Length: 170
Ligand code: S3P
Image (cartoon, rainbow, N blue to C red):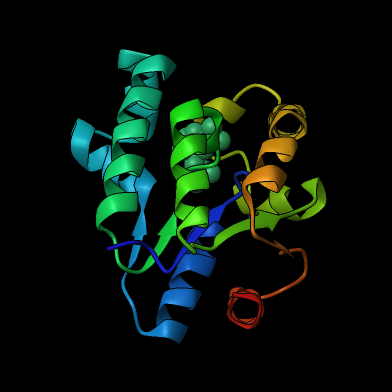
């Protein structure tokens, strides 16, 4: 079993809402690795960062992604930083070689900022969220682009329309 599509992209790109719309369009279940991580840890993501540290968060994330890639038969949304782990990059490359679709949801700072807000649930964006977001995106864009088989810009586009574009592209 393997996901019908895996959504990657930075915070505020709309991974969760697009996953919902795409799963509805295809009539399949959706899964979000951020939710899986919280279930595995038994606490919210900000608490994992504060109490256990980012390294422990990334470890749980690697396990959650590995499990979801092997067992989820629907739409899968990954946390924005999941693609940083070389193991996860390898798993996604293998998934694509086996015919899978990895969708990079691209987004500008202007469109992502109001979606992310100053939300304390995103521990990596505390302090100066806009500058942090730009730094994350600059570092990760090459990885998102390298891993993706499809790239869709989500600025000024509803989740339903983004889902329709993905449907047409895969
Ligand atoms: C992170 C993004 C978050 C969450 C965690 C770390 C990141 O998910 O996994 O806070 O490194 O970009 P979203 O991309 O859904 O916000």
